Length: 368
Image: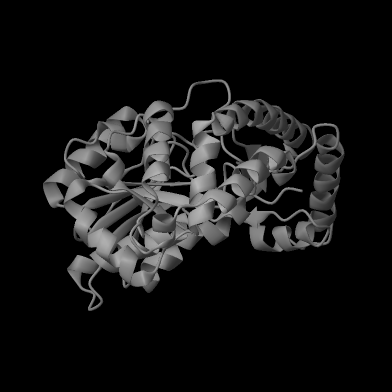
């Protein structure tokens, strides 16, 4: 029920998607079935660009859009392309702290020497970074994972200036920025990049359904030839009928309508979760505002609590929470990450009350 980062697939527009998929399965042309469009069908690349240009302020051409199976595949592709396997200064990568554990693992496997850079209420703070300049920087500026904060304009401009002066590539993961509650989504970092230093990552797995296995990567023109060759060599292609069906789904306005509907529903679920946790767990947890996204950060007021032990206790009852300590490379701050996408507002109060009682039991048994 509370697994973070998982959309509610029960609300997926099954009938509309099935119709698009069936139509394309019957009507694919011969040249669509070859190897010519490994980087993505032109119709989908254009549809993706049209979507992010309007909703996220992205500035690019359709040829810069590459269709990939997942953002993880895109991070791995860029990491292995930019980070030399022999290591050294050229293999340094900066990453937000706390941050996305999959990105940490993928960049480390690509040979990166990871340097965690602290995030605060304004996003990543480059003044707190140490050591040599990096080869790349991984950020989630519009809705930081896992804290949910939005990077300030001042920090964005500072990041772009630093990247341009040092020849650094910024990986902007915009994974669930479509869902903002109470305000309009802030424009992507890529949209204000004038130095060709930002590679923009997005996915339909968080927006629609994980099973689609469709994401996209928008790269600066200077990197496009290298990235396209690497994608072809690694075989990072998405089935052509899925791409064609998704392009139709988007061009018909189905995606836009679905996002509008789900933003309202997710906002209601987020508000109910925040209120219930504050009501029943406020003595234990400092709960974030829940301004957007599919997950909610909550920090333990007692910094000595073992959040991994607490998570094991709660997850034994099927909640699926993630301990915040798993998202730190350096000394952790204990907390829990809650998923809100599948929350039912009429049930969350009971769930939060049970979680609060388990906190009390754990404290009584000295388990935390």
